Image 1 (tube, rainbow, N blue to C red):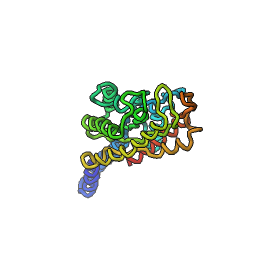
Image 2 (image 1 turned 180 degrees about the horizontal axis):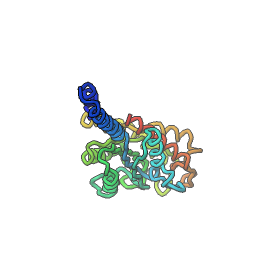
Image 3 (image 1 turned 120 degrees about the vertical axis):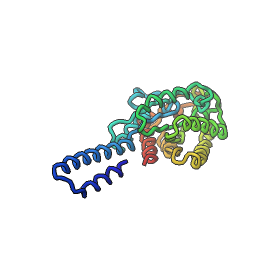
Image 4 (image 1 turned 120 degrees about the horizontal axis):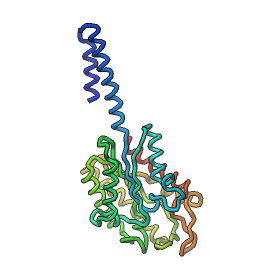
Length: 276
C-alpha cells in the first residue's frame, strides 16, 4: 500500500493542472503519504508478548515481581531497542509447573495462556509473540506434575503446545528459550539433584530439533531464543542466584533481582534478534 501511495504522488507531480488545485492535491497526497508511512512502521514494530514458564518466569522470591520479574525486564529492553511507545505483555509463569501442566489436553493452564493472548490481541495488526521457557520442573527427579519428563516426552509435550498455539494464532511467532542452570544439589519440596540437572541439559537438543521440525511447515514462526543464560548463571550463580536452604545443603535455582534483570535482557536480546 505504501508503494502505491508513493507512486501516486510521483505521477501526480507531472500532471498539468491549475496551480491552486495542484497545491491542494499535493497537500492531500503528502498527508496520506506521511500517515501511511507512520502506520506501516507502527504495524511492524508494535508487540504483544505472552511469557510462558515456571517460578523463574513468574519471579518467585523477588520482592516485587510486578516490577522485577524477567518478563518485565525483557519487555523494557525491547521497548528501548525498538523505540516504540508500548509493549503489551502478560506474565504466565506459574511456580512449580511443567510442560505437562501447560498441555492443551489437560485444560488447566493452557486456557489461561489463551485468555491472556486474546486479551492482548485487541490490536490485530500487532505482532503476537509467545516467549517460552519450560523444563526446569520437568527435569526434577521427583515432585512436580509428570516429572521426571524424558527428553522424548519433553519434545512431544512442547510440540503439542506449539501446534495448538499455531492453530489458534496462525500469524504468531514462538520463541523457545533454553532453561537456565541450577545447582546439582537442588532439593527443596521437589528433588532435582545432579540427575535432574543432567536431564535438563538433555532438553536443549530437543528444543533445537523442535525448531528444525517446524521450519518447513511453519517457516519464520518457531525460533530458538536465548541459549546463553545457562552458562552465564552457572558461572555467576553466587552473584545472580538466590542461595536457598535445601535438603542437600545450600542450592541455587531462582534469580535474585539483578539476575532476573539479566535474564530478562537475555530474553529481550533473543526476541529482538528474531524480530529483526
